[in-house]
Length: 409
Image (cartoon, rainbow, N blue to C red; front, side):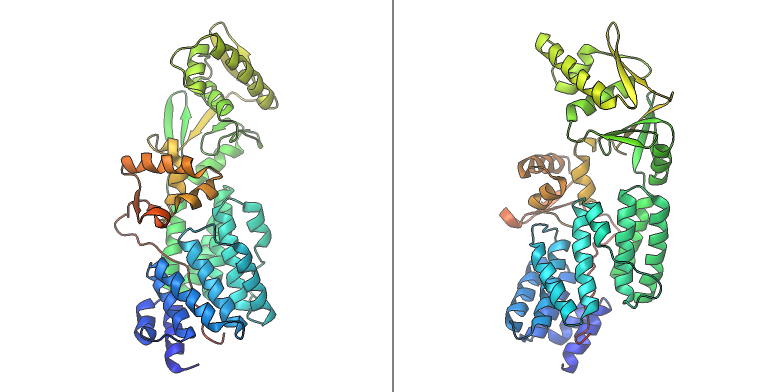
């Protein structure tokens, strides 16, 4: 391996893509193409990066399986960073197996973390946790991979609302980031840490509201309160969770009853809330009776739904506290799930958002159009290359976790 390639790889590993390009920008041999592709990815030009990395993989061919596998891993990370979640994961698994077979454990571990991060993005926490390898103080891995590991651990803990475990993992990530001395990794850790200090929800009780941090949400869910969680569309009480994400009508009824508790809600108000009807007729009232019966069946372990002269009232069991947990901003609540994915600062395609949200692409596109009209999101590109992101916040930069392995490592 010549000295320019080695110097460019070291510059990339240190988070200096411009320094790497100065050394290989005019070269078209396979190692230079691969390094140029990774450098362009770190600079945010994902389309050009993917073209260069694919060209390098073709140039390496079957005679250099390790180098070709490394290019496939780099392309997978570019796809992940550009939120192309439809990129075939089997290609990454094959590349990882090739790297492991040839003793390249560091890059094989990096490929495994890419697969885990993709699972994390699409909400498959159990699968991500099962693939997560054990990492103790004796593990001989580069500091950059330690940062990625701890960020994944923290991401799983945050999504499971385990703030103590998340803070512990982020503290370890900060130490590893200082050791790695890569600015992009340091910024990524700081961004993840900031999530724990940002309001995560609104607590609504008897018309009064208060913003809650994630730690407060964890405390509330562990209490004896009857909680209607509008962030995850479920009802929880005393450690028992009843998911209603696939039953939007039932959740609308449960939330309306919880917001009015200890009072009741009229039948006309429930019809308007659940079905969007301006006035209730007999067909609406008949449908309401059916849906209330289904809600009673769902909530039977934790609460009852009793009829009154005017409508219905919620009767929680073994508690006298009913709380509605809503999104931090009422304005953004309708499309909160879309905004939550865009909040990571990366650019998303509508197809990737649809995959992550388990929704149709047309539904996601309508949500994006509504948010764009309200100046909540912005887009660039056309057709299949169109990407969506939130407007940039002054003082923050979009980061890309793409630590490049040194040639021969």
